[in-house]
Length: 266
Ligand code: ADP
Image 1 (spheres, protein in one colour):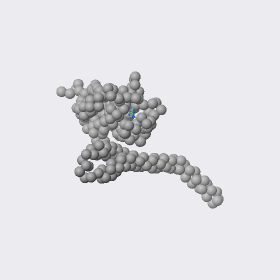
Image 2 (image 1 turned 90 degrees about the vertical axis):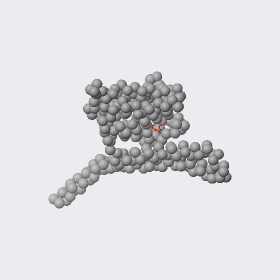
Image 3 (image 1 turned 120 degrees about the vertical axis):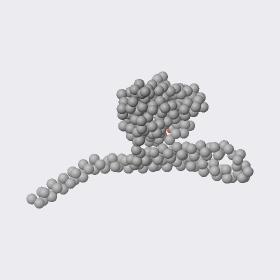
Image 4 (image 1 turned 180 degrees about the vertical axis):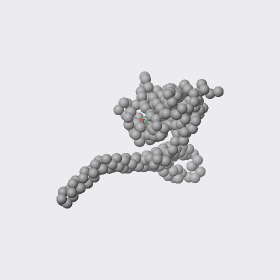
């Protein structure tokens, strides 16, 4: 009868609506909440340096004009904060471009040795100036197909962290090699290490291990999220391990197509 048909139809509609809400609404709600959290964190991170700069500038303006040049300390504090904000904004932009799916990887045939050397040339003097040792290990040469600029950004994030968290005289190692059509890049340091309980979360946006330990290093918790994003764009993975006796090792591994081994190079 019509009533039974309507009842069945009604029950079916409710069942479908329920299934749809279970299937699709949850991720939408979760990602909406995450997006809100992301914007709130971003705004918070930007507000702190802006307040510092504002205070420094207001303080400078209380000085007589001819004395302003004597205030090098507050000018350089303000500049530090501007640099911090610039990094933060670059990272936020990178992540939101990633979210909007507009970051395209542009694989090129990369010469591994010269790619690694480009990193070494910048980071060896930087490590020395901070009284830390950087050791480079290029176990393999030849070419490999990946996006050299994006992968460079990912490695730089790991090296910056290694330098940041390793005490003076500490040792940092960068190793690159090819293994079974994968590019493997590892960065080890002799810093404080990362507790097991935090290892899974460090790749999340704005996650930082132990705020008090981090207060003086002045990061923002976005670096590893970006490194992970870049590696995933390459269909690869990034892992974190303990570096014995103490410290951390990050390992990136990405498929690199056929490439060409140095041995076949004439
Ligand atoms: P940040 O800008 O805070 O360094 P990241 O996303 O790069 O942000 O790292 C997230 C957190 O992981 C850091 O705040 C720090 O607590 C921890 N971490 C990352 N790299 C290292 C490392 N090499 N040694 C010790 N802790 C690290």
